[in-house]
Amino acid sequence: MKIFTSFIIGLLVFDCNKQPIADNNPEPEEEQTADTSLRNLSPFPFGAAVNINLLKNRPAYRNLVIEEFNSVTAENAMKIRFIHPQQNTYDWADADYLVDFAEEHDMRVHGHNLVWHQNLPDWITSFQGDSAAWENIMKTHIQTVVTRYKGRVASWDVVNEALDNDGHGLRESLWLSNLGPDYIARAFEYAHEADPDALLFYNDYGNEFGPTKRNAIVDLVTGLKNRNIPIHGIGMQMHTRFNREDNFHEAAITSAAATGLMVHISELDIAVNPNNDPNLTYTPAIQSQQAQKYFHIARTFHNIADTLRHGITTWNVSDADTWITGRYERPDWPLPFDENYQRKTAYYRILEAVNP
Ligand code: G3I
Image: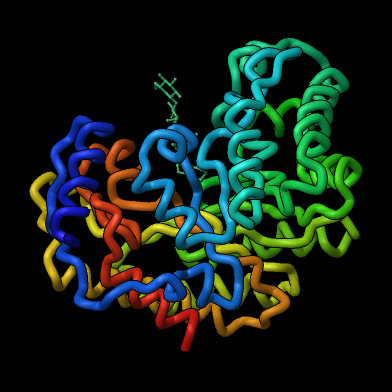
């Protein structure tokens, strides 16, 4: 029966993706019962970023999201390019769908994101205006979106990736050049005005790269906190790799917690093919090393103060859905579920880490 079910799921996945499915990852022996899910066993919210199209059209994907997670983030649907395609037009359809879905299944919604240098619609990239006009764009966008979901979206990535790649300073962006460096603080204030109960996060990547980026992020959020800007948490994306040493992940998580702000591992995935080998095989040894990284990250997070744990969110659900294979045009298997939506060794190690 199990084999038959996997076969049917495989066919469905094949049909949606139009890509061959490699069964490199045999299912572990353990039997899954209804109460051994991340959402039931994790003491903090465990979530995934979701693709609304897959949620609507791929039953194996939808069922797994319902079974395993109690927090969801829109992978793309709340980004400005999609939700605010023209200056006076908002497209709420996908974001509304996700918020309704989450409520129906007793899940938290984490909003991603309000201000980012990427994914801007053409009307913004071609906009000509003085700094007051740019301020109005940022404020109106933030407040329109946050107000719509007031009381329904629990937390927001207010500003995403404002630091440059290496953490040497603020990133060049239209927001920085038109509004100056304090656009970050004002974005938080505008969001807070629109929903005073929402938890507001600064979200970035590279806390695990090393001290330069890590300290730049910590300094940025600490500076905001010390000025009483309404910031409540640090989102660390944690798009990491299977051979990064544990102490880098540990320093990222513990330094974020030491700020006293809440911590969200907001976009977790663990790549196994960082060198872009087109012929890589996902061997049992690689799977096991990757699973160990998942264990270590999840256990380190589990061990910070419970009041600071906003949760862990993986960036999409399965190896069939990850952004990594498309972006880098390489095979990779970065998530805890395989292409057939079966639990991988990594999944079982996470479960063990969050439920010692
Ligand atoms: O929806 C359009 C479709 O209409 C169009 O035909 C097609 C042609 O390119 O593009 C589609 O949009 C794509 C979108 O994903 C939805 O699939 C965009 O091109 C593509 O750039 C976009 O990529 C997303 C990327 O952010 C940029 O927004 C990835 O899915 C998403 O996983 C990635 O997520 C980011 C986080 O937001 C921030 N942290 C890093 C993370 C990974 O890059």
